[in-house]
Image (cartoon, rainbow, N blue to C red; front, side, top):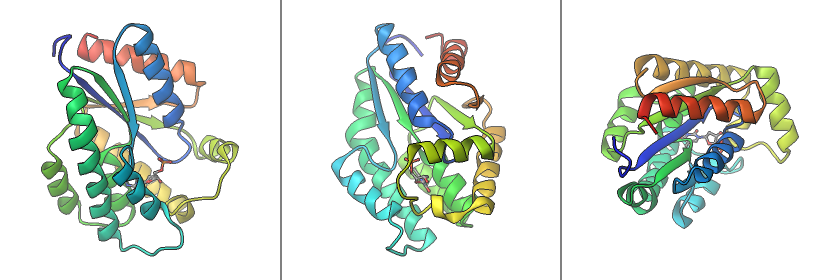
Length: 208
Ligand code: TMP
């Protein structure tokens, strides 16, 4: 990796882990150092994917888990091809709040969709993050942060503690199977501490 090549960083974790705040803080820090940084989120980040997000997070429209999986990947394909790949080609740093590990954790580990089906869709997307931060917090902290954020619970927030435990197990399994790409981050401390930890890991692993 050289200074001109793009860098693709993803943030993953359960509900209330503080990913969005950490993503913003990390982007601000890298911009202050002179990097061009694009931040985006999943599902979403394009008009089409944001429309799919509304359907995916709806609590009133039923969706079979395999249909959810394919819709998450449809939203992802639009974001990757129209936003992420072009930004990486311009040499930018892209920070994405969630990516395909969320489908593996939520739909495969959480909702029992076939792991190899999700793996096939991951191959089809054909874009691997250079670095994935998996933010971890206790259930108590997650609940506090979710409550502080307010708003009505979405499809996945309604699923309860057992589901979230399977999702957390999924993220752990992914991190264990791809240690070169994934870094587990203790997200209990304040955001500045979490951002500083992520910044150090980027430097250690990519030289930037
Ligand atoms: P968030 O942007 O507030 O984290 O909400 C996105 C929700 O969608 C969150 O509950 C995780 C879930 N999700 C999946 O179930 N599968 C996926 O592939 C992605 C990207 C998100």
